[in-house]
Length: 187
Image 1 (tube, rainbow, N blue to C red):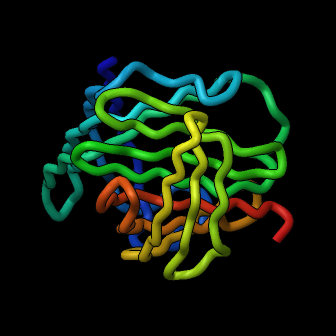
Image 2: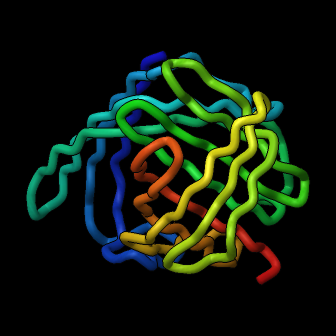
């Protein structure tokens, strides 16, 4: 799978943007190349790890980026963003982990040696700068890790802020980097 996206609009500066359009004109172009076949993690939602490249054009200059990337698509109608969840996505040179824990259950997958194995269960400590997790896979393997937040942000969704952290993780799969999103609509 290969993909691309392009955006022209106005952005906010900073890690805690308000709702609505920003004031800084920008143009972003992205490309994506998958490392494996997309995984349908639940009905209507597919996820795939890969490599990405991007170009960000701002009034102050143009920036090129490249590295680990993840593509996801979700289709279907729903009246709200979602019930509460914690979403973990971590990637390294030879492995990746995507795991979600919510009241509706846990799901995800691990990519090892070019093959995917589904996540059966995710346990993760509460939102903090350092978190521990344990993911149980369908094949019985257990992946444990400790994440450390490198940068924390939040975005407004449906009148509530959704925190997110860019993290580095020491795991049974080696050192990985990625994100953890925590959505608590009733907080």
